[in-house]
Each structure stands twice: as structure tokens, then as C-alpha cells.
Amino acid sequence: AGAIAVGGCAAEGSTGEQLRSDRPLPDPFRLPLPIPPVKRPVRRDATTDWYEIVQRRADVELLPGVSTRILGYDGVFPGPTISSRSGRRTVVRHLNHTDVPTVVHLHGGHTPAEHDGWPTDLVLPRSGGHHTHHHVGHVTTGRRDYVYPLAQPAATLWYHDHRMDFTGPQVYRGLAGFHLVRDDVEEALPLPAGDRDVPLMITDRAFDADGALKYPAAEHSAGTHGDFIEGVLGDVVLVNGAPWPELEVDAARYRFRVLNASNARRYQLTLDQGAKFVQIGSDAGLLGAPIEHPALTIAPAERFDVIVDFSTFRPGTVITMSNPPSRGGAGRIMRFRVVRRARDDTTIPTVLARVPRLTPPADAPRRRFAFSRGIVPDGLGGERKGWVINGKPFDPGRIDATPRLDDVEIWTLSTDLHHPVHVHLSPFQVLSRNGHSPGDFDAGWKDTVDLRPAETVEIAVRFTDYRGRFLLHCHNLEHEDMTMMSTFATK
Ligand code: C2O
Ligand code: CU
Image 1 (cartoon, rainbow, N blue to C red):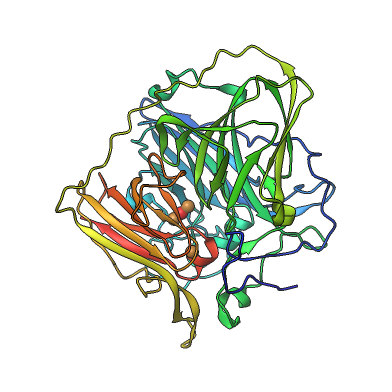
Image 2: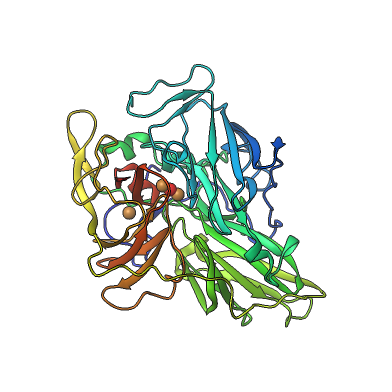
């Protein structure tokens, strides 16, 4: 108990040490895949859709027959899915009925700074609750309206908590949901839709004997621990909140929007029976052309929009999605059971969307960001081990870079260990990996790129529209909470 992930890089590529659940794990493939509820707007007019979400504690059944206390958007995990039209303003009023401060970030959203979920722009609980010592941000009590212009192409976005120092535990307890953006380009394509367009939020969790979510105690993560905290890994894989679920499918093509919403685990997803993933979209939108992958490596916060074709399977066939078997409880993910033949008018077009190349000019501004371990202040006048960018821990009052709007810049990201690096405000394109061409999973518009140990990745990035301060950070949420964030301010 209290075992926490410590130093060294796990051979499997997921940094951290797996927590063990203190109760017998359920049998896999027994529960149906839940589909998160789709949120209805409370109001709409010519330009805007308004939503209201209540963040609250709830007791839900994640494991069969056991109640688990979560922090949920509308009290569910995953939170409700918001589905927006590109270019239509979406205003989400979040009411904080929990007893902790929260912050909402729309991951992948092209969002003005004041609505982007700055880590100290806290929404305090409506009554009582904790007081905060961060006076750097714009703090509200009880609620906040987040305004999203969504002037961006169709993509699979997600929203999650982003409270400074507490993102890891608050997302782990359930504060995460999908926010889809749709547009005409995507709708004109003959892709699977409706019931055959399925979001898959993959997370790993561990459970206490009484069914509570098991997360290392705050004093461990806050610094009395002797070594670097690598990240929290669970031994139960939840897809859309259910352990190793099963989805009954028609013998037809399906679109899966795969999101790795785990705190620290990366997966290498495979399908058996010869089924394949055909990738049609990346983090921030459709690809130019589809890419077939025998396996899908997905780091925390990345999204892969894929088509899986079940049409060649006879009813009764079972197809299992796995992760390499060495990973124990995380060695399997979910499975699909083909239950009927069905009509299918979809195809996978060879041309999907126009993805213009971001070509940096010869004199493009260059910046370097090095991700590493470091010694950081512990907030109590001492020091502790943490994670830093360019040698510095996050300080919400410091600006580390000031890119000009509309410039194409080259950023060189380098690392000691595994770090999934996420950039807010605008998507980027991967130019190179270790001096070679981009990797198999680097295609298209990205907002998160997985840096593997000792790698250097160059990206081309162009920020547009909004001036203000934004984040660049590691999306291993324990690293993020242990200060692996940096601020850039667009000018
Ligand atoms: Cu998904 Cu800054 O976060
Ligand atoms: Cu990291």
C-alpha cells in the first residue's frame, strides 16, 4: 500500500509502477461498453449553443456490484459528450458542486486565453470548501462560463480538469469527457456515423478493497517521497468507464475515436483475427489520407481517429483489443463481438481533408524546450525532486517564450525520459524525430507528441487569433503536477 511509481524508466515504455488493486478484479469482457451521454444545450440561438454542467461527487458503479465515489461532470464518468459544430460558439457553464477548486481545459480547443483553463483560474466550490493560496489567477466562486469559439476543423477534443498541482488526482477521480467538433468537410465523407461512430476513452485505475479509487496520498506526491514520481498506473483498464468491456457490432465499418485519458500509461493497441486500424484523423482533425497501422501506440492525451472494418467477419466472431501481455491487467483493453450482418454504405476515401503543410521559412524563430528531472522548491521552503522544462519548474508568474501570432516557428523538444508533450492554443506538425522523418504516429495536425527516452522532436507551430498566456506541458499528469509546465505568451 502507498506504493508509488518511482525512478527509472519502465521497460515497457509506460513510466511508472503499477498500483495494485486491493480487491479481486472483475472478469474481463462481461460488461457492455458504455457510451457517454450526449449533452443537450440548454439554449441555442443563431450563433451559439449554451450548455450547463454540474461538477459533483457521485457514487457510481464502475466495477460490477461495487460503488465507487467519483468526481464527475454531471456526476458521471466519462463526463457527457458535447458535440459542437465548427465555428458555432459553444458556451459551457460549469457549476462547481464539489468541495475542491476546479479548472476546466478544453484539450485541443482553439480557445482565447481567459477561457483556456489557466491552472490558477480556479472555480471555487459554491459553498465553503477549501481556500486557495494562488492569487495569480482569475478566481470565481461556484461557477464559470467557458466560451469556446471553435473556429477549427472537425476533431475529437476532450475536456478535463487542469487545477494547478492537482490535475492528476482530479482527472483520476473522473473529471474528463469528450467534446467533438463536426464540420461539413467531414460530413461530406462516406464515413461511419451514428451508432457506428464511437468514442473510446481508455484509462487505467486501481481500486481499494472497498471500491474507492486508489491514488497515492498527497504527502507522497507532494514531496516527502525520496525519488522521482514517474506517474500513476492502474491495474484495471476502463473503456468509457467500464472494466475491459465488450461492444456488440454489426459486420460493418466502425469509426472509433480513441483517446488515451490515462494519467501516465501509454498503450500499444492491437487487434486479433487480422483486424486492422485505419487511421483517418489525429489529435486535431482529419488526415490528408488514411494510414493503416498494425498496432497503435498512443500516449496520454493523444487521439487516434480510426476505422475498423468488421464486414469480413461472420457473426459470432470475437475480436480482442490488447496491449502487450507483459502489462498484467493492462494487457487487455476490450473486445468486439460481431452479432449480425448489416448493410454498410461507407468507404474509406483515399483523400480525406486538405492538410496544408506548415513550412517554416529559413529564418523561422527557433525555440528549445528540454524536458528533464530537476530539483524544485517544495513550497515549504525546502526542495524536492520534480520535473522541469529547460531546468525550471512551472511558475504561473513567469513567461518563457513570446511567439508572434501567425509566425511559423520551429520548436525543438528534447527529453531524458518518456514525456507526452502538449501545446495549448494551436495544433502543430511534426517535422522530424531524432533528425529523421516523423514517426508512424506523427501524421497530421497534432496537439500532443510522444517523446521517447533520449529523443529530440522538431515541430512546426503557428499560433493564431488569440493573444495571451498559454501552456506547454508534459501530459503525464503526475509530471504536470510536479511542475513540468511552461508558459508562452502570444503577442
Ligand atoms: Cu489535456 Cu494542458 O492539457
Ligand atoms: Cu513527463
